[in-house]
Image (cartoon, rainbow, N blue to C red; front, side):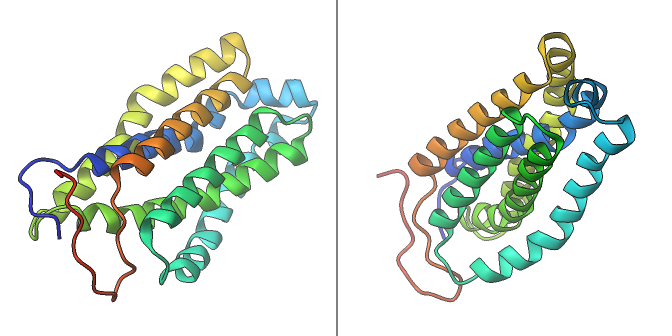
Length: 201
């Protein structure tokens, strides 16, 4: 466990990606009419982008988390953020409903797995007894996404095109990936003993 009274920068790195994920999850609701019109599908069909996202999140998350449970946390997080970034690029570049749906499903699976694994990582970056604060700080990125990111993204998406918010989310994911690479230490998989990294060195 990292014994520091200061807030570990790795938690802020996780919060950046949490913000990007929050925007990606909810932004589609605000631009559904624009998506339906651009891709030439009924609005009801475009609504499947929300429903199938939730389904992929519910089904894919436990499977991925169980499959990666014994892997070192940092490479797993970097991989999940990379998959999330790819999913948003696919969504932004989609020329058909099927392609956009595929991008959304990929994004959803990475979304749920990141939060499940990221929360355990955040808890391991602080002294014992401060895990709840660390996790709350990470999830503050999600809260800010709903309060600021999604309304702003919807405004931009409806004014300048629905693809732009997805590109913006991909950029945020890239920043989150770089921050994770720089600030999240190499933690062993649960159950493996190893010296705790010291981010202050």
